Image (cartoon, rainbow, N blue to C red; front, side, top):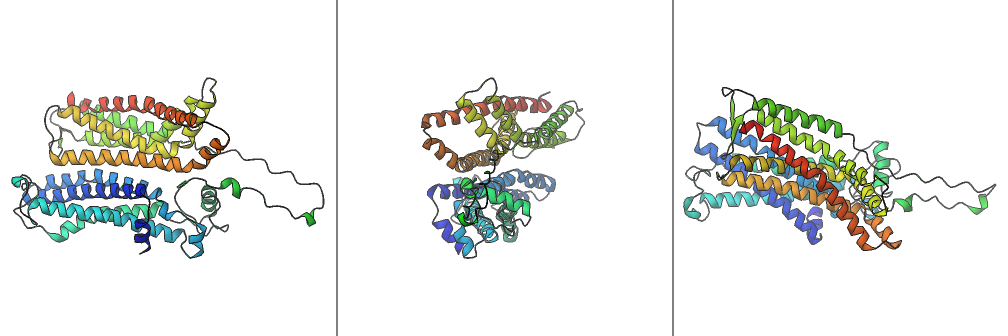
Length: 434
């Protein structure tokens, strides 16, 4: 009931993000049901149906990743001292966030079932002159337990991932880190802490770090020296070498697949996608993982490059901000680069051959989830630096300077990630064109 009330009283922008999660869950659920329809229509092609179901893991992973990003920026489950006073601690808020995610994805799965039944003709007759009757198995009865099992994958996986991401931690190290991240909300003993790293930024950290006023009656000597201010710690991603190694391994596997003989076992991709050696799938997977791992390190490197060669105030502001946001922006940006490189590869290999409706839906779903995750991470970064922006405005910094710094950060990221995406896409086409 609390999750429903918090969902109803949210900001329109929060509702838009939740509806986007529901739309992604609807698309993934429809793809899962389509694999069931293919299995009913072609009972002899068990391997082909299993391959189609395995390919649905890509949009399922993209949907879960998007749901996790939206849950991190949900202000309804932000820890507050008032909620903790009435018993809504981090564990309860984690449960509320997981329930809200489950409700959004369950709405999408229900919509997918209704659309699937409508296209099959189970509700109002066959639409579109029965064009979708073949791959939706309109002539076969739909096994309801199997359909509900497939539809339950998205809500269960999304809510479990959100609960695991926001789980409370009982260690004192996590308590101190979360205490700094949430401006002194957590308990000093470290019994309950909220598990999302940097979820809403360090709000009020300066107010909580001030020393308590000393008692004048207890003054028995010279005033103690105030503690030296601790420098702001900027994350330094160390996964760049690992990401580069995995990316190089993926490209090496793809180059090896290009030299295989025609007698090598070929991988027949579903929905009219190109056919090639089975090692291509392993190479594409390693390439995508390498780009996701190297994303934070590349964003951190962009921030350092902005500050080289005697930078001014504008480049310092843009570079330091990009270095601070590298761990939050880099990984979604790397995932988006992997998705765009894969889409470019498929488009160049297909040529003028039209792709099927399910492959088009899957491509749009994965690309939309990756782009939505990046935009949600940008919103989270804006929320985390709201206090810094307000402080700069109070000090007299013009708004045009802040906008120019944001444009400079975006330009630096585009100049680094765009050529990388094109290079990876060109190298990924070699196994299927040579």
